[in-house]
Length: 320
Image 1 (cartoon, rainbow, N blue to C red):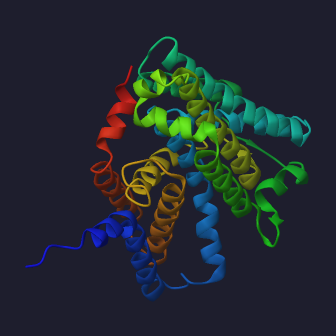
Image 2 (image 1 turned 180 degrees about the horizontal axis):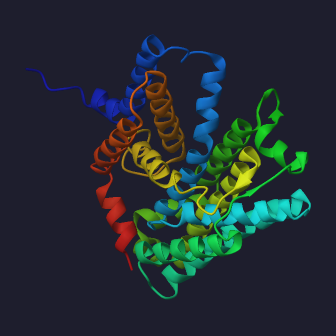
Protein backbone atom coordinates (compact mmCIF):
# COMPACT_ATOMS: atom_id res chain seq x y z
CA UNK A 1 0.00 0.00 0.00
CA UNK A 2 1.37 3.41 -0.94
CA UNK A 3 2.15 5.74 2.00
CA UNK A 4 -0.26 8.59 2.65
CA UNK A 5 0.59 11.89 1.04
CA UNK A 6 2.30 14.06 3.72
CA UNK A 7 0.74 17.14 2.16
CA UNK A 8 -2.73 15.68 2.58
CA UNK A 9 -1.98 14.72 6.17
CA UNK A 10 -0.78 18.24 6.93
CA UNK A 11 -3.91 19.73 5.37
CA UNK A 12 -6.15 17.38 7.32
CA UNK A 13 -4.33 18.19 10.56
CA UNK A 14 -4.78 21.90 9.94
CA UNK A 15 -8.37 21.95 8.66
CA UNK A 16 -9.86 18.61 9.67
CA UNK A 17 -11.75 19.98 12.68
CA UNK A 18 -13.09 22.85 10.59
CA UNK A 19 -14.26 20.31 8.01
CA UNK A 20 -16.01 18.38 10.78
CA UNK A 21 -17.78 21.61 11.72
CA UNK A 22 -19.03 21.99 8.16
CA UNK A 23 -20.31 18.41 8.22
CA UNK A 24 -22.08 19.12 11.53
CA UNK A 25 -23.65 22.21 9.99
CA UNK A 26 -24.96 20.17 7.06
CA UNK A 27 -26.38 17.53 9.38
CA UNK A 28 -28.33 20.13 11.37
CA UNK A 29 -29.37 21.90 8.16
CA UNK A 30 -30.96 18.69 6.92
CA UNK A 31 -32.43 17.42 10.18
CA UNK A 32 -33.15 20.31 12.56
CA UNK A 33 -36.33 22.31 11.86
CA UNK A 34 -35.78 26.03 11.24
CA UNK A 35 -32.01 25.67 11.62
CA UNK A 36 -31.33 27.52 8.36
CA UNK A 37 -33.70 30.38 9.16
CA UNK A 38 -31.64 33.58 9.01
CA UNK A 39 -32.77 34.72 12.45
CA UNK A 40 -31.68 31.40 13.95
CA UNK A 41 -28.24 31.58 12.33
CA UNK A 42 -27.88 35.14 13.60
CA UNK A 43 -28.85 33.96 17.09
CA UNK A 44 -26.15 31.28 16.99
CA UNK A 45 -23.47 33.84 16.21
CA UNK A 46 -24.75 36.33 18.78
CA UNK A 47 -24.99 33.74 21.53
CA UNK A 48 -21.48 32.54 20.68
CA UNK A 49 -20.08 36.07 21.00
CA UNK A 50 -19.55 36.00 24.76
CA UNK A 51 -17.98 32.55 24.60
CA UNK A 52 -15.70 33.60 21.75
CA UNK A 53 -14.56 36.84 23.41
CA UNK A 54 -13.75 35.13 26.70
CA UNK A 55 -12.08 32.33 24.76
CA UNK A 56 -9.86 34.79 22.88
CA UNK A 57 -8.75 36.28 26.19
CA UNK A 58 -7.99 32.83 27.57
CA UNK A 59 -6.09 32.03 24.37
CA UNK A 60 -3.94 35.17 24.65
CA UNK A 61 -2.94 34.19 28.19
CA UNK A 62 -2.30 30.60 27.15
CA UNK A 63 -0.21 31.88 24.25
CA UNK A 64 2.35 33.25 26.73
CA UNK A 65 2.25 29.93 28.61
CA UNK A 66 -0.04 31.09 31.42
CA UNK A 67 -3.40 29.63 32.43
CA UNK A 68 -6.17 32.07 33.40
CA UNK A 69 -8.97 30.31 35.26
CA UNK A 70 -10.40 33.53 36.69
CA UNK A 71 -11.78 35.09 33.51
CA UNK A 72 -15.40 34.05 34.01
CA UNK A 73 -15.46 35.26 37.64
CA UNK A 74 -13.71 38.51 36.69
CA UNK A 75 -16.27 38.96 33.93
CA UNK A 76 -19.10 38.54 36.44
CA UNK A 77 -17.47 41.09 38.78
CA UNK A 78 -17.02 43.61 35.98
CA UNK A 79 -20.64 43.01 34.93
CA UNK A 80 -22.10 43.81 38.35
CA UNK A 81 -19.95 46.94 38.59
CA UNK A 82 -21.15 48.06 35.17
CA UNK A 83 -24.75 47.19 36.02
CA UNK A 84 -24.56 48.91 39.39
CA UNK A 85 -23.23 52.12 37.86
CA UNK A 86 -25.88 52.15 35.12
CA UNK A 87 -28.64 51.44 37.61
CA UNK A 88 -27.27 54.23 39.79
CA UNK A 89 -27.65 56.72 36.97
CA UNK A 90 -24.03 57.06 35.92
CA UNK A 91 -23.22 57.95 32.32
CA UNK A 92 -22.81 54.87 30.09
CA UNK A 93 -19.30 56.00 29.12
CA UNK A 94 -18.10 55.83 32.72
CA UNK A 95 -19.77 52.49 33.31
CA UNK A 96 -18.11 51.00 30.23
CA UNK A 97 -14.70 52.36 31.24
CA UNK A 98 -15.17 50.98 34.75
CA UNK A 99 -15.95 47.51 33.39
CA UNK A 100 -12.90 47.52 31.14
CA UNK A 101 -10.71 48.85 33.96
CA UNK A 102 -11.85 46.19 36.43
CA UNK A 103 -11.14 43.38 33.99
CA UNK A 104 -7.75 44.74 32.98
CA UNK A 105 -6.74 45.42 36.60
CA UNK A 106 -7.61 41.85 37.59
CA UNK A 107 -5.52 40.56 34.69
CA UNK A 108 -2.56 42.73 35.66
CA UNK A 109 -2.82 41.53 39.26
CA UNK A 110 -2.81 37.94 38.02
CA UNK A 111 0.32 38.75 36.05
CA UNK A 112 2.05 40.26 39.06
CA UNK A 113 1.19 37.24 41.22
CA UNK A 114 2.67 34.95 38.57
CA UNK A 115 5.80 36.94 37.69
CA UNK A 116 6.76 38.66 40.95
CA UNK A 117 5.58 36.16 43.56
CA UNK A 118 6.24 33.24 41.19
CA UNK A 119 2.92 31.58 41.98
CA UNK A 120 1.88 29.08 39.27
CA UNK A 121 -0.86 30.64 37.19
CA UNK A 122 -3.20 27.74 37.96
CA UNK A 123 -3.12 28.67 41.65
CA UNK A 124 -2.92 32.45 41.25
CA UNK A 125 -5.91 32.69 38.94
CA UNK A 126 -8.01 30.29 41.00
CA UNK A 127 -7.39 32.59 43.96
CA UNK A 128 -8.37 35.59 41.86
CA UNK A 129 -11.54 33.77 40.81
CA UNK A 130 -12.50 33.29 44.46
CA UNK A 131 -11.79 36.93 45.30
CA UNK A 132 -13.77 38.18 42.30
CA UNK A 133 -16.75 36.00 43.21
CA UNK A 134 -16.66 37.28 46.79
CA UNK A 135 -16.68 40.90 45.66
CA UNK A 136 -19.49 40.19 43.18
CA UNK A 137 -21.77 38.85 45.89
CA UNK A 138 -20.72 41.60 48.31
CA UNK A 139 -21.66 44.31 45.80
CA UNK A 140 -24.99 42.78 44.81
CA UNK A 141 -25.85 41.04 48.10
CA UNK A 142 -26.75 38.10 45.89
CA UNK A 143 -29.42 39.97 43.92
CA UNK A 144 -29.03 40.79 40.23
CA UNK A 145 -29.16 44.37 39.01
CA UNK A 146 -32.09 44.83 36.63
CA UNK A 147 -34.11 47.80 35.45
CA UNK A 148 -35.08 50.22 32.72
CA UNK A 149 -31.60 51.31 31.77
CA UNK A 150 -30.24 54.07 29.56
CA UNK A 151 -31.05 53.20 25.91
CA UNK A 152 -27.61 54.44 24.88
CA UNK A 153 -26.03 51.72 26.99
CA UNK A 154 -28.44 48.99 25.88
CA UNK A 155 -27.68 49.83 22.24
CA UNK A 156 -24.14 48.51 22.76
CA UNK A 157 -25.49 45.00 23.10
CA UNK A 158 -28.82 45.20 21.30
CA UNK A 159 -28.41 47.70 18.48
CA UNK A 160 -27.25 47.29 14.91
CA UNK A 161 -24.14 48.56 13.15
CA UNK A 162 -23.62 48.54 9.38
CA UNK A 163 -26.74 46.44 9.00
CA UNK A 164 -25.66 43.71 11.41
CA UNK A 165 -26.39 43.07 15.11
CA UNK A 166 -24.01 45.04 17.30
CA UNK A 167 -22.76 41.89 19.05
CA UNK A 168 -21.60 40.41 15.75
CA UNK A 169 -19.89 43.68 14.83
CA UNK A 170 -18.00 43.80 18.15
CA UNK A 171 -16.98 40.16 17.75
CA UNK A 172 -15.59 40.79 14.26
CA UNK A 173 -13.78 43.91 15.47
CA UNK A 174 -12.25 42.11 18.46
CA UNK A 175 -11.17 39.16 16.30
CA UNK A 176 -9.48 41.43 13.76
CA UNK A 177 -7.75 43.42 16.52
CA UNK A 178 -6.45 40.27 18.24
CA UNK A 179 -5.33 38.78 14.93
CA UNK A 180 -3.52 41.99 13.98
CA UNK A 181 -1.81 42.11 17.38
CA UNK A 182 -0.47 38.57 17.06
CA UNK A 183 0.50 38.58 13.39
CA UNK A 184 1.47 42.18 12.61
CA UNK A 185 3.05 43.68 15.73
CA UNK A 186 6.32 43.23 17.59
CA UNK A 187 4.39 42.60 20.79
CA UNK A 188 2.55 39.74 19.14
CA UNK A 189 5.78 38.14 17.93
CA UNK A 190 7.21 38.44 21.44
CA UNK A 191 4.12 36.84 22.93
CA UNK A 192 4.45 33.92 20.52
CA UNK A 193 8.17 33.58 21.29
CA UNK A 194 7.56 33.73 25.05
CA UNK A 195 5.05 30.94 24.89
CA UNK A 196 7.25 28.78 22.66
CA UNK A 197 10.57 29.24 24.49
CA UNK A 198 10.57 31.68 27.39
CA UNK A 199 14.21 31.21 28.37
CA UNK A 200 15.53 31.65 24.84
CA UNK A 201 13.34 34.72 24.44
CA UNK A 202 14.70 36.18 27.70
CA UNK A 203 18.27 35.59 26.56
CA UNK A 204 17.42 37.45 23.35
CA UNK A 205 16.73 40.55 25.43
CA UNK A 206 12.94 40.40 25.77
CA UNK A 207 11.39 41.20 29.15
CA UNK A 208 9.51 37.92 29.47
CA UNK A 209 7.86 38.91 32.75
CA UNK A 210 6.37 42.00 31.12
CA UNK A 211 5.08 39.94 28.20
CA UNK A 212 3.40 37.47 30.56
CA UNK A 213 1.75 40.31 32.48
CA UNK A 214 0.48 41.73 29.18
CA UNK A 215 -0.91 38.33 28.15
CA UNK A 216 -2.86 37.99 31.40
CA UNK A 217 -3.92 41.65 31.26
CA UNK A 218 -5.37 41.06 27.79
CA UNK A 219 -7.32 38.11 29.16
CA UNK A 220 -8.72 40.41 31.84
CA UNK A 221 -9.53 43.07 29.25
CA UNK A 222 -11.45 40.48 27.21
CA UNK A 223 -13.42 39.64 30.36
CA UNK A 224 -14.21 43.33 30.84
CA UNK A 225 -15.34 43.73 27.23
CA UNK A 226 -17.55 40.67 27.52
CA UNK A 227 -19.02 42.00 30.77
CA UNK A 228 -20.04 45.26 29.10
CA UNK A 229 -21.61 43.54 26.10
CA UNK A 230 -23.36 40.90 28.20
CA UNK A 231 -24.81 43.46 30.61
CA UNK A 232 -26.00 45.68 27.75
CA UNK A 233 -27.52 42.73 25.89
CA UNK A 234 -29.33 41.20 28.87
CA UNK A 235 -30.14 44.48 30.67
CA UNK A 236 -29.16 42.76 33.88
CA UNK A 237 -26.06 41.84 35.86
CA UNK A 238 -25.85 38.97 38.33
CA UNK A 239 -22.89 37.92 40.51
CA UNK A 240 -22.64 34.70 38.51
CA UNK A 241 -23.43 36.17 35.07
CA UNK A 242 -20.58 34.43 33.27
CA UNK A 243 -20.25 31.26 35.32
CA UNK A 244 -21.80 29.08 32.63
CA UNK A 245 -19.33 30.38 30.05
CA UNK A 246 -16.15 29.16 31.67
CA UNK A 247 -16.11 25.58 30.38
CA UNK A 248 -17.52 26.43 26.97
CA UNK A 249 -14.96 29.21 26.45
CA UNK A 250 -12.07 26.93 27.41
CA UNK A 251 -13.50 24.22 25.17
CA UNK A 252 -13.63 26.71 22.28
CA UNK A 253 -9.92 27.47 22.73
CA UNK A 254 -8.95 23.81 23.01
CA UNK A 255 -11.05 22.94 19.99
CA UNK A 256 -9.42 25.83 18.14
CA UNK A 257 -6.00 24.41 18.93
CA UNK A 258 -6.80 21.43 16.72
CA UNK A 259 -7.12 23.59 13.58
CA UNK A 260 -5.31 26.31 11.60
CA UNK A 261 -2.26 26.25 13.94
CA UNK A 262 -2.48 22.79 15.54
CA UNK A 263 -1.17 22.66 19.10
CA UNK A 264 -1.10 26.45 19.52
CA UNK A 265 -3.81 28.81 20.80
CA UNK A 266 -5.00 30.90 17.86
CA UNK A 267 -7.71 33.44 17.21
CA UNK A 268 -9.32 31.95 14.06
CA UNK A 269 -9.47 28.52 15.68
CA UNK A 270 -11.01 29.92 18.87
CA UNK A 271 -13.64 31.80 16.85
CA UNK A 272 -14.56 28.71 14.81
CA UNK A 273 -14.52 26.56 17.95
CA UNK A 274 -16.96 28.90 19.69
CA UNK A 275 -19.27 28.90 16.68
CA UNK A 276 -19.15 25.10 16.50
CA UNK A 277 -20.08 24.76 20.17
CA UNK A 278 -22.82 27.36 19.78
CA UNK A 279 -24.13 25.58 16.69
CA UNK A 280 -24.05 22.23 18.49
CA UNK A 281 -26.14 23.55 21.37
CA UNK A 282 -28.62 25.24 19.06
CA UNK A 283 -29.00 22.24 16.79
CA UNK A 284 -29.56 19.84 19.68
CA UNK A 285 -32.25 22.11 21.13
CA UNK A 286 -34.05 22.27 17.78
CA UNK A 287 -33.91 18.48 17.56
CA UNK A 288 -35.46 18.20 21.03
CA UNK A 289 -32.44 16.46 22.57
CA UNK A 290 -32.24 16.52 26.36
CA UNK A 291 -30.17 19.41 27.73
CA UNK A 292 -27.68 17.16 29.52
CA UNK A 293 -26.57 15.60 26.22
CA UNK A 294 -24.89 18.91 25.38
CA UNK A 295 -22.90 18.78 28.63
CA UNK A 296 -21.78 15.23 27.86
CA UNK A 297 -20.69 16.18 24.34
CA UNK A 298 -18.90 19.28 25.68
CA UNK A 299 -16.92 17.07 28.04
CA UNK A 300 -15.97 14.78 25.18
CA UNK A 301 -14.87 17.77 23.10
CA UNK A 302 -12.60 18.94 25.92
CA UNK A 303 -11.07 15.50 26.42
CA UNK A 304 -10.41 14.95 22.73
CA UNK A 305 -9.05 18.48 22.24
CA UNK A 306 -6.68 18.24 25.19
CA UNK A 307 -5.06 15.20 23.56
CA UNK A 308 -3.41 17.53 21.05
CA UNK A 309 -2.53 20.31 23.50
CA UNK A 310 -1.66 18.60 26.80
CA UNK A 311 1.95 19.80 26.81
CA UNK A 312 0.90 23.42 26.26
CA UNK A 313 -1.62 23.26 29.11
CA UNK A 314 0.84 21.59 31.47
CA UNK A 315 3.48 24.24 30.83
CA UNK A 316 0.96 27.04 31.31
CA UNK A 317 -0.50 25.64 34.51
CA UNK A 318 2.64 24.72 36.40
CA UNK A 319 5.50 26.80 35.00
CA UNK A 320 7.35 28.93 37.50
